[in-house]
Image 1 (cartoon, rainbow, N blue to C red):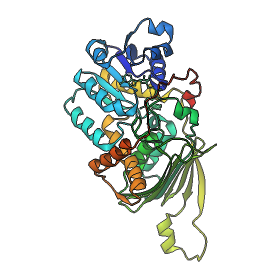
Image 2 (cartoon, protein in one colour):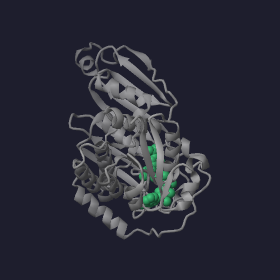
Image 3 (cartoon, rainbow, N blue to C red):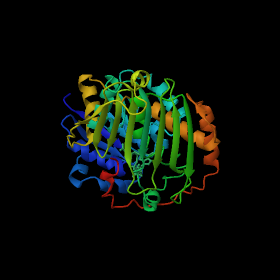
Length: 389
Ligand SMILES: NC(=O)c1ccc[n+]([C@@H]2O[C@H](COP(=O)([O-])OP(=O)(O)OC[C@H]3O[C@@H](n4cnc5c(N)ncnc54)[C@H](O)[C@@H]3O)[C@@H](O)[C@H]2O)c1
């Protein structure tokens, strides 16, 4: 086999983009798609559509579609059941982020996945591929920054309009989506936070629900994190600010790294902070330092496509995965802990009890004002490609 036959379930904004990305790949081809709404297939280029099988029922898709790998790009609550069905049908999987809405469901999926050691299972963490993120990971892992003492991530450039929230009947409700900015926009940064820095042991968050939009879920989060090694963190997210900021600042013994506007800048201390503090003869002032601009060249190739190519290579050549599915539970736990802290108005210790979180979510779902509407998908999703960073 020199290419992988790929099926995509959910041909909405993301799934239809995946079909396009796969069209640019050498090691993969779309052979089948599935969506409960047959109108969704119109999003696929006519010439492509003529050569693939279209299903409106996932059971039929799993029984009949000639595919090796299935990409699951449906609303979050269905990720786990469809991923399990795919593995039962012997398919490799890429699950869209988030792995699930809450930790208990992710635990269920990961337990099931253990039954299929020969299948490749990945999560669509396309932001792990961004060269700057890869570079920051390398700088941290190679000890270039020294011991990290504080991390701040302000990620408020996820602006979403009311029209966006009204564009899908599942969006921004406890019953339909299971959360807001933490479960929809921020799974990437929550994953990167844990990928770079590990998980904190304590989280305290202020979470605002429907502060900027007519929605019942959270659209602003201010979280304070404490790590077992003494490091602290701040994570600030919003979908209600314009133009918004995406700034990651890492304070470490060897200096300060800032990643903003696609550029990494590192101000390097000549003497490590704690050594300088103990040994300097000066009453005021800091160590000499120098500014380094760290290049991280972007190849402009879609990061989603690169994740799919990575999984196809893993299937064909047994190469390692960039984003193994099981790792998705870590960023999810971080997001769940922030939401839980906001809901209960108290500090949460990690690991969280997944049953406690599930029970809290259940209460929100029971009180949800969400009513299923028939929403005609907006034909104009032209801004979508620029909306996922
Ligand atoms: N990785 C990224 O950068 C990224 C970006 C956007 C969205 N996403 C993820 O992709 C998923 C889908 O988001 P979207 O914006 O494309 O949503 P969307 O509403 O545009 O599309 C969802 C599609 O799934 C179909 N669907 C719903 N339930 C189904 C089922 N059980 N079986 C088959 N089809 C079903 C709907 O009819 C719809 O066409 C979400 O989980 C979201 O978090 C990821």
